[in-house]
Image 1: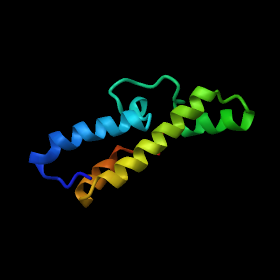
Image 2: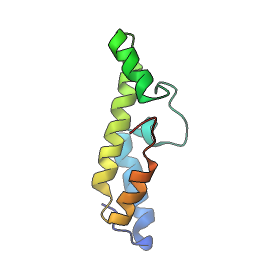
Image 3: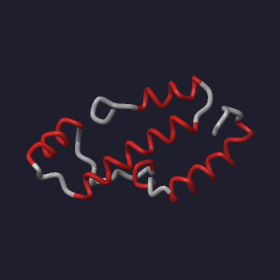
Image 4: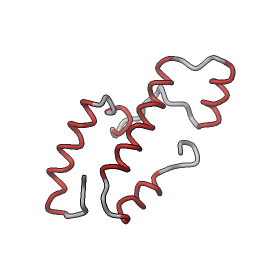
Length: 93
């Protein structure tokens, strides 16, 4: 859990990256776009209803949701949680 102390951030970041690797969340939190993610929730929902969602798309959405949940649990201060809340977009809540 990151408590907002700048001096502890480097250690937390290393541990978080390793945790993300173990939990198979790397594609959800990296700097590169995951091309298996749909453009928006609406596009994904439409594909789900039509039965055309690929296994890769489902896994990308699952990893994204897991990463957001884990980050929520990993951030201690409300100020940090607010940053996470602001990162949620209309495309992917």
